[in-house]
Length: 445
Picture (cartoon, rainbow, N blue to C red):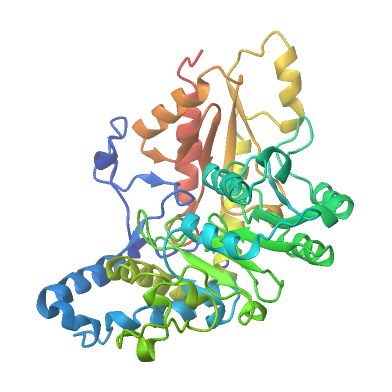
């Protein structure tokens, strides 16, 4: 996987056709569409499709017996045992530090309830000003649950005026100056809107030096960039699996808790699936949790969701896991960026402000607000369309769909496009750049 020209695992993923997505401007209706939306929902792997069908068959042929005796030797009570080692490798953790369970925001609440312990002097939650809305809701509700005013308890960091990304030095400066009052530091590994890869290791290190708990929302980072949660000394992390890990819409999520907390932070909201397996089905009256992150499990997980995730993780394993995947991702995203910059509609970031003040500022264009440095971004490129607030973005987005290019829009002015290193090709990037120009040239204003 050393070149963006190399063939990835495209034939192992199911991609919609141009006809299926309504790409009426494409003559090749039976061809695969140009799917660059893995940052929102990854494509289905053939493995996942097969494994889910096998579980449906097992359900039909075994009924409840499938919990313990399974035709494919995957008894449902032990199904996560096949997933945990793979997931631990993806996030850079020990197996006991990882649980495949529940949903992202539910896991975030579980972890915050355990680790956010405000005192009169140390009570703030340090986060990004434009965190994903579900995270913002969780932060505010956790502050309220502790009787705190979110406007004073939540310390939001914003990029400098005229910029789109948070500078590492600005994050560290706030930690240096206000660390004594910060109870919890929690950022996203990769920012959902801009695609910025946050400097996780130095932020975690500084947070720990200042006595803060440090957690991460890895929704857009897991399966996208290599992670070393254990080695970085992260306290906790949560993530979903339906983006770069391709587990399917609403797929099961994940949770990490560093092993040093095993005997300190015990599950407060116990459920029977977190009880040790040896006696779980004896239904004892006293909860005996599994050691580590898996003790936070509550209810038995959907086997269909587990099967879908297992299939996609096995595809990732075939690709060599995160290091070769990241290598190809850097090259593929870099090639895509260069193609986009060749467009006559591309506006360098340094020229954006000038465009607003000149008489021809109504001309449509776009710039890229994702960091240029590959080490500061994942696979995603976020395109900001100009003039701001003019409706250009929506018109371009709608036209791209007609050309068979699937990304996603973020109102009012951004389209996110993410070449997934497991199944996207250089041809996909070329198609997207070509049809973006076509869409921009259709009298948008």
